[in-house]
Image (cartoon, rainbow, N blue to C red):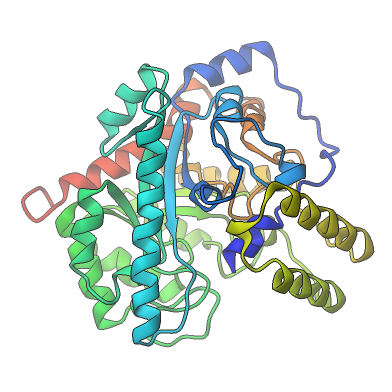
Length: 403
């Protein structure tokens, strides 16, 4: 499902809310270490003619992250996700997932190797600080949907050797390991294989990510894990009652064990949506015609987005804006405090709201946080400090470290 969402993440007109950023705020934002915990940009790396070193336009090709816009928005880097679409869970599906995950891993490593003056692989919090100090972009590697490991749990060690630091168990539908928040219960939490995966991730010092997981999975991972855990791109269920969001009780439980929730800018999770069958039908037809999103030429990509704009005109659907995103972020901050909150916008995977369409606009969040009364240290924690702390704690809480 995600490749279609990626391709159709067309920006809407700018939000009506005030998005002005003062010179003082911009200077502060650029001084901070700014990291995003969920970048789906690896999905862009196979697109013909798409170059991360060149500036792109979200309205023309849907991409939201590239080197010029990272610099403009003060984004020092983050977790580049190995996302694998959930397919059939038979032998052929397992083989496909295994190969797909490894291919995406290689694309990320190739991006770094081909531009060593611009990007560098980070494995630890200290790596991130050192890399950012040189002016390079920080590339952590994460996995969204653990299905590439279902055929052989030992592959987790292979991924770790190649730089994997964070592991998301599941995606939009349930897999061999866990129930999804957006699917009917199958395992009523974790499967036996899922429990083994939690143990292995702890043993290897890999940070566990419960975004997309069901409430039961959240509860079980929180209880089983020796290390704090993260929700790399989730928002507030109190603000919008979507199963992908976390309720206040679970937010507090996550924080009580040292964890962090990274608030997402994925519109469908931020606001309630009514049924729109005609739009769904048109979008499904468009998706069927452009199924191989990663293989589209620049001309084909422009055609896709032109058709998507026409669907938006004919069958409009509400879209969240910066005001709504801030409502989620400020609520989560009120519930658990600035030591347990970060940003995981889901860029290039369907994230982005009106007034916050791509990464060059990140300073707008800093302005809104300052306006709400948060200080420089709070912003430093929210933009990267909390994320690096929980990663370090996961790496320390191995079977040879502290529990």
